[in-house]
Structures are given as C-alpha cells and as structure tokens.
Length: 418
Ligand SMILES: Cc1cc2nc3c(=O)[nH]c(=O)nc-3n(C[C@H](O)[C@H](O)[C@H](O)COP(=O)(O)OP(=O)(O)OC[C@H]3O[C@@H](n4cnc5c(N)ncnc54)[C@H](O)[C@@H]3O)c2cc1C
Image (cartoon, rainbow, N blue to C red; front, side, top):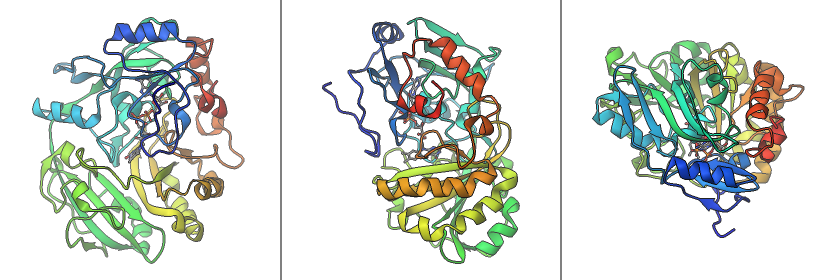
C-alpha cells in the first residue's frame, strides 16, 4: 500500500489498502464490487481499528453529492463524507438546525452515526437518532436505500461499518435556533451528587468536567436554548467562570466555542470546540461508558473510588446526558443514559491496563462502552447480549447482507458481530 493513514489521534495505523477516494456513488459501487475486503473510513476520529479492513479503504471526502433540504419532510440529505461543521453552516444559512452536536464539529456524518456519537442533553438523543434514511452500497456492489418505514433502518444506522459503504444520509432537521453557553467552576461534589438530576436538567445541554480528585467538579458547561426560556438559575455552590475556559487544563480556550452567556447560532455553541481549531488536546486517547440514567450517581461514585488509578492517566473526564433511542446497537438503546467519558493522556499501555478495572467497577450498572473509543470488552461477567437486547438481530442483519464478510474486520470479529 502507498498511503499510510492513522486515526486522528495516531492511536491506530490502518493496515488496509489501497486507499481510494471516489467522487461518485457509481465509483463507490465499482470499488466495492471489485474488492474482496473493503471498509469505509469517516474522518478517522475513532481511536482503534474499528474502521480498518484487510482490503480497500474507501474515503468519501471527495464524494460529490448535493446537500438537499426537504422543508416539508423536515429532513436534509447529505453526502456521507461531509463533516458536521460544514453541514451545520449550510443548514443554519437556510434557516434549519440539528437537535444536537458532538463536542467537535470535525467528524464526518456517516462515521459519526455509525458509532452512536452523541452530545449532551436530557432531551437530546444521539446524532444517529436523527437518521431518517440511508443510501448504501451493499456487499454485492448494488446501491440500496433504506427509508423511515424500513424495518431494518433501526439496525442499519449504528452498524459500525459492517453493512456497507453509506453514500448518503438523511437526517431530521428543525428550524434554526440560538443557544447561549455559560461555564461554572468548582461545583462541590456533594451538590453534584445530591442534585444530579436537577443540575443535568438545568439547561438544554449540560456537561460536568472533572479529574475525579478534590471536593469539587472542575467545570459545569451549560448550553441554553434561547427559545426554551431565559438562562437558568445559578448552579448551586459553583462559581461563574472568570473568563473563557477550555475543559482540558492548560489548553487555550481560543479553540472553544463562545461562552459567557452570549446567544449565538446553535452550531457555534453546541460543540465545545470550533471547526477551525484542533479539538480537545490532540495528543490523547479516549474512552467512554454509558450507563442507564437511574444508575448515574452510583456509577459516578464508583468512578470516584478509582481516582488513584484514573487521575494520573487523565487529561479530563466529562459527564453527559443522552436521551434514549431504539437503534439496535446504539449505546442509548432502550432508555436515557449518562455518559462517563475519559480523555486520557497518550499512555496506551497504562490506559489499556486501566480499562478492565473501570469496566469491572461499572459492570453492575450495565455500562455500554462507546463504540469509537477504547474499551476491553462488555464488562466483567457481562456479554454483549446482556447489554444489547437486539444484539443477535444485529449480528444476523450483518450476516444476511454480507454473507462472505466483505465488510468484516478484526474489530467486528473481536466483539462477535462477525
Ligand atoms: C477529539 C474527539 C472528540 C470526540 N467527541 C465526541 C463526542 O462529543 N461524542 C461522542 O459520542 N464521540 C466523540 N468522539 C468519538 C467520535 O465521534 C466517533 O469515534 C465517531 O465515530 C467519529 O466519526 P468518524 O467520521 O471519524 O468515523 P471513523 O472513526 O472514521 O469511523 C467510525 C466507523 O464508521 C464507519 N464508517 C465511516 N464512514 C462510513 C460510511 N460512509 N459508510 C459506512 N460506514 C462508515 C467506519 O467503518 C467505522 O466503523 C470524539 C473523538 C475525538 C477524536
């Protein structure tokens, strides 16, 4: 192979090749038909070999597909390789919006929805939940479309790249809206735990940032939808931030979206990071586990008990809230979740050693690992079937549509989906 690609964080070097960049759906179909093994890459923001293939790697950043808005249906159809930040600008300019954004706008639409990527908000399901249709090139090289009434759509959206190369994604949209973002610091842990529901529900989107040490949560980020009323009351026991903040200690807040309660377009406030800047820290690894909402406080307490293990490896942790959905492999399948996220220092061996310990601590809470971030398994004493009631259906779906394993890879085999 001539091109050497890595994940955004450099945490995995892709073994497959060649790397191809088709510009039309017909070219994608021809590439798939010609390849014994093939996978699509998104913007490569996952942290492991999820997107890799022993064969051809298809990058869709040059796919020339128009972005079309259907105002009556309240949907937008977009090329799979378009980044959310670019889509969001287009939508806002036309008077439309998405219901949520991830922490960064740099990620590609198809790769993002394939892993159940999410933002934060009690009423905000993950980005995959907005999918109303997919166009994909299947294992036989033909182009299929799945619409909202298709029984398989709920299994096809979060398919981890195992169902084919998605070429177009149709997403639900709503009229554009404004958001004001404010940051608070030093929320006492006693308040955070006693009033967890109230704090997480105190704005459209709330994130708690902590390194798990000390008596206080370091930062509380609140993003208020202006059309949902005025800014909420103060965060009990916390202090307003003295100026712009970056969630990762020592990083320049210039990379972050505007704070200070200044209203602005949804896509310039819902992500933490600006499209023009490097998001997060850059040199990092990430993990995240999602627990049912009712276990949130107990799970947070379990993690506080691991602070001596976790904190030395950590840049920052983030606690978020995600509304439930019905997508078979979504980490929020079946009910609301709390996301317990870790941005690690780039210390791979130490992080890998810590993962099973964290998973054991979170296993009683049916924690589901984020598909795009580092994990070691379903948790001590757990199977994937325990965590996902539609697991066997998802596996059967991949098998049925790709009997020869054209889209199979080591990741899917490790988790038992192939
Ligand atoms: C700095 C940083 C911040 C992050 N913040 C968040 C966050 O706020 N919330 C969150 O939930 N996650 C977050 N993530 C994780 C990230 O959103 C996910 O890993 C997401 O999948 C990345 O999308 P991608 O386009 O880079 O996908 P990739 O990593 O390139 O691919 C992911 C999967 O999608 C498949 N895929 C990609 N394109 C296609 C296609 N066209 N057809 C079929 N399958 C396809 C791949 O085969 C692979 O299985 C963050 C990651 C980073 C690096």
